[in-house]
Amino acid sequence: MPGTCGSGSTATRRSYLIPLALVAGLSLCLLGGLPGHTRLTLTDADTGQHIFAIILRDGDRVTLTWTNSIYRIPVTEVYIVRAGRLVQDQVIFGDSVDAPDVGAAHVADLYHTGDAFSARGLDRPFARVVFRIGEIGDPHLSVRGHTFALKQAVGFGGRVALSASHVRLYALLAELLR
Image (cartoon, rainbow, N blue to C red; front, side):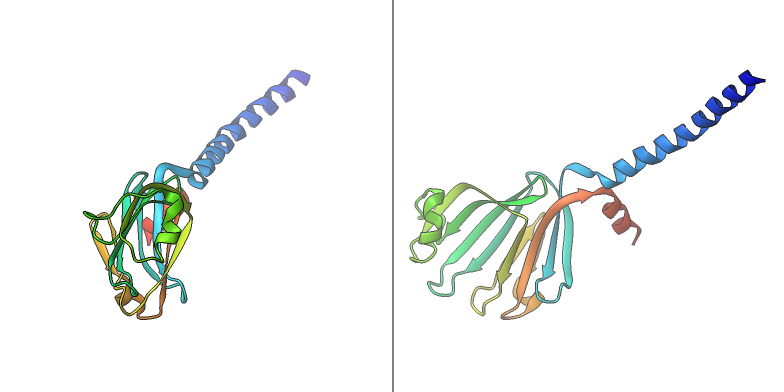
């Protein structure tokens, strides 16, 4: 009976391999990311309280508008979501019509002068950006038709954190089931 024992073992191994392969494949799918998408989360940076979360397609824009408290001029910062990151693409300081275009290397210095400027194509990636809320700034965050008054969300002196991350399918499923 030596042939019988060998045949039974092969059939038994095969019957375990198929479900094992299915479980392994499903696990990889759930633990892997959703390509071409980024999860954006807005929280109170001091308490961790959830304010807003959304899944965006890579290339979608996020805009922060505020007023500079020293020079009392409008500021617009444009971020693009890409591969689980926020990428600062543009800053307009002052009236966008009159603002001269400057290179990325000059942006940090120009924030302190009060002169109008526009900088495009900055390509500055961030996983997390924290904004402190001042009395005058009145910052608003706009993303895909939603606008958030950040001062209303956390109050004067508060801080909000805007975080970007890869979309994990298991997290997406858990969120949908809540």
